[in-house]
Image 1: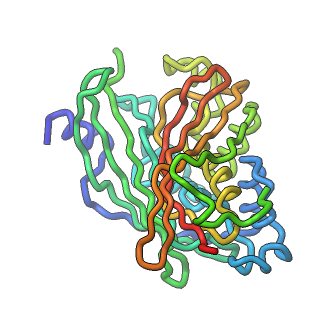
Image 2: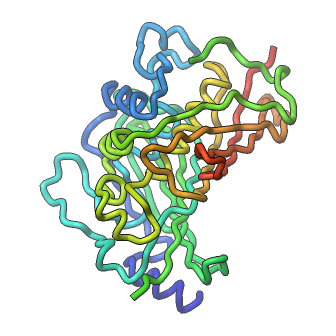
Image 3: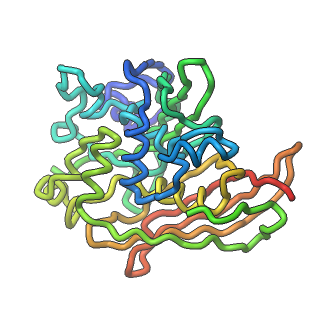
Length: 172
Length: 144
C-alpha cells in the first residue's frame, strides 16, 4: 500500500474489508418507482401499469434497472447524505468542503440478479473492497472500490454494485 | 417504448441499438437528487459547483447516464430479455442545456449453458460530439 493510498483511507475513515450493513425501515413503493422512471423520461408501462406488467414475464411492476443501486444513495463510502428518509440526525459524516482531497466517481458497475419490485425491503451489505494508486494524465491518483450487495426481505439477491471513486489532493 | 420482442437470432456483432437522446434541464438534476436522496450540492447549487473549479454549472450525477443506458437497453431487449450487467465510466461533465445521446453496439454474442448472451459497448455523447461516458453491458435474449 502506498503512502497516498494509506493517507486517503485515513482521510475517509475507511478500512478495507470492513463491512457495514443497512436495512431500510420502509418498503419500495410504486410511486417511488414511477417517479424514478419519470425523472429519466422512460415511459415503459412496465414501471407503472400493473395491468400491463402482470401480463409480461415479470408478472408485475418492476423498477427501472438502475434504481436499486441508487436507492437511498446507500454507498460503501461515507458521504454527506448517508442518512435515511425520516432520520432526524442529518449531520454530515463526511464533509466534502473540509476534506483534504477532491473526490469523484470514476465508474459504476451494476450486476443484476432479480428485479426490484414494489413491497421489497432492501438490505445492504457494503465494504470498501480495494484501494490502489495509478498514474493518470492528471498525475498520481488514488482509486477506492466500494462494493454493496443488495438483498430483499426474503433474502433474495437482487444486485451487486461496485463503485470506483478517485481522490486527488486539493489545490491549496 | 417497447414495440416487439428481440430474439438472439436477430442480433449480430456490429448491430447498433437505436440511440436515445435526452435534453437536460436543471429540473432533471433536481428530480434525480430527490428520487435517489442524494443531495450532493454540486448537482443543485450553481455557486457551489462553480466554486469547486473545473465545472461551469451544476452537473449531472454520473449514474444518471447509466439510468439512460438502462432505458436504451430495456427498450431494445424487450420484456423477455434481461440485463445482467451494466457499467458506466465518466469522461466529461454533463450540464443543463446539454442533449445527451446514448449509443450501443453489439461486440460479442455467445451461448453459455442455456443462456444466450450478448455483450455491448456503450457510449454517451453531448450535442458537440464529446464523449461524456463509455460503458459496457451484458444482456440475455430469448431464442426463437
